[in-house]
Length: 260
Length: 256
Image (cartoon, rainbow over all chains, first blue to last red; front, side):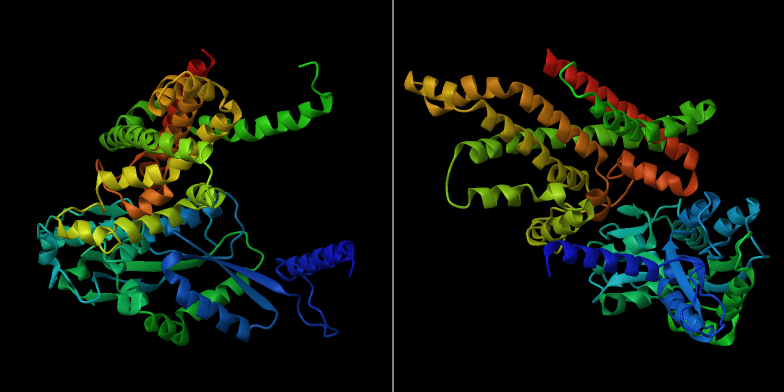
């Protein structure tokens, strides 16, 4: 192959690849008069990544010709993206306040429904080097405690728990996201951190979780809805239904999420 | 200007617009009514102060370490020099988050050096020192690369002349090389200061984020975006003004 034709082949390959990733409107190949290939765009909070990847696969298997594309980010970032005109069919938020922003902007396609919940848990590096036992032990002087900043949902939950327990934490860092907190714990930089139950589960052997009764004060509710103006409103609603159905709920529970 | 081909003006103009337009758009989004209150809040002021402090310290460390580094790279010849040069400049192309992870494995509590610091009762993680380390790590190559380039362009004629007149190496460096390098040193320092001021990824990965200790202005902006986008825009504008001021002052110095 001459260099130029090789280049052409590579370009053709790229075009094919791009076509393969194409969005809504791609027509299905084959003679069957089947429905056109549809892309369902699901915007979901970052903490939902693992279960939603599974759910998307399940949804695709149940609906032929449907391609579910997932966009994971912080809930507030997602709302902002939708407000700025990003195409989205379904939005799943990690808290009610960010869903509230969507409703306030009148961008919700249907009344949001709560579909799962998550609570805080103490995460410590494997082996628990600082011998943390309960929430009160997080206030010990020598302990490197890392939490979420009050500006983000997990930080707001931390503040609620703190108040409910009548404690005052003095963390060495207030992180931007719950993932940052978890990373500080699993790398051993922090002796303890407050994260969600699902995060501890995700960390596997690298972090141990410690339950505490005060976590009941700040249960994080996850609402979901379709987005207004979408062409795939019906399909979007079916996805919402799957998430709320028994098999969807079981799947979520497998990742540590609790019911509502 | 006359010697420039005219067709170059169009891409030059496009490039200029590409840089300026986003800055103008941001300026248009600033809520001027509440601007004063937003940027003078306790957390904003602390973040600005911390940013200026740590960036100045980092720029200073860059000069102390970077000048000798660039002299060695520009004036010596040994096997593996070019390899060494590319290794030293790695932070230029590394995503800052990766730099932060690398620093964590070095100075973190369980890091290569950090675990020994820990035994001595020193903790780098979550301290302002960690911020300076992260900033210096990403900013140092900027100083080294601009200074080394200038050293190579300047050549060794004057140094050779001074040496032939009997000046010792230290005297040649202090009285010939460094004065010749002043403009490049100044612009390199400003460049590294500016890079340190904008540092985000390595800091948030390695140093954490706590008001007054490790939360610099870029971290504060990113955090404010979560709850108060207006404040984030106002603070971004402040950071932009600081950057413009630095560049203006530095250019004037260099030209003068």
